[in-house]
Image (cartoon, rainbow, N blue to C red):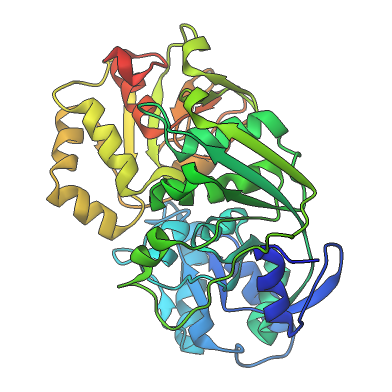
Length: 419
C-alpha cells in the first residue's frame, strides 16, 4: 500500500520507510514557531526542563503579532519576554515591530517554510504552511517547549482525506469560498485529527495566496493539517525565497484515504459564514438584508496581495457607507509596501478605510477593532465563535475580501456584483 503526502513527510522525519495512520511516532522538526501569546508560556516550560540552550537557534521563529504594537503594559511585558529570549539564545528569526508581520503570512514570505518540512507552531493556524507541501500543525506551548529543547515532537499519524476540486471558478470566487464551502459540507468536526489533502485541476490553477487561505482554515474543520502537493506555482513562489534545500513529496496512486470528496467549483458562489460557526455557510445570493457596523480585511487568512487587490478593485472610486467602519490589515510589511507601490492604500484611504500595521489584533478581539455589544462585523478572518471579536453579544460573519469590500460600501453584506 502506498502513502499519502502527509504520511511520506512524517515517515521521512521519523527515519522510517513507512508509516500508517494511527501510529505514534517521534519526528524531527524543521521549524518551531511561537508568538507573543504562546511563546512566553513555552519559555517558562523550557526553563523547567533545565536546558540552557535551544536545540538549534536557526530553527526557531518568534513573532510578536497578536497584541502589537503593544496595547497595554501586560502585552509589552509579553513581547519583552520574546525579545530577551531571542537575544539570549541567539535566535535570528525574531521579528520585531516594523520588520514583522502576521506570523502565517510572514514565515512563507521569508522563505522559512519549504516543501517536505515538518513545522510545528504554538498557534492553531500553523497549518497554513501546508499550501507549500509541508506538514504543519498547531501545538500547545508545552509541546513547543519540548520541541525547542529536543528538536522533535511526538504525534499520531493522521488519516488522510482527499478533497478534489474541478472546474472553473466564478467571478469573485477565491480559495476562501472553496474552503468555507467545504467546511459547510463536512462540518467543523468533519476532519478531526485528519490530514485534509487538497487537489484537482482547480487547485492547480489556484493562486498561491488562495492556497494559503485554504490550508489556513483546515483547522476550522478540525483537521490536524491541510496540505497540497508542491507544483510549478509553488516552486515559482519559492524560487527567490526558500532558505535552504527542500524535498517535494507526492501521494502515491494507491495511497489510502479515509474519505474522498469531489466539488465542481463552477457551482460555488462567494460564501458567507454566519454566526457562530465557520460551517454555518450560505451562498451570497441567500444572505438577505444584513446591515453591518464593521468590516475587517486582513488576518493570516486573507491579508495577502490577492486579497488587497480584490478589495481595492471593488473600492476604487467608491466610499465606505457612513455607518460602517472599514479596517484594513496588510499581512506583512512587504505586503504593506507592495500595496503602497500599487496605489492600493490610496484607494483604501480615499474610500474612508483605516489602514493598520500588520497585526492579528481584531481577529481575536484583542485590539484595533474590538466589537461592542450588539454590533455586527463582516471579516476576512477565520473564526466567528461567540465573542471572538469582542463582546459576547456581538456577531461575526466571514467572507472573502471582495465581498467584504462590497459590504463596506453597501452598509450590509453584499455581493461585489452589486457595486
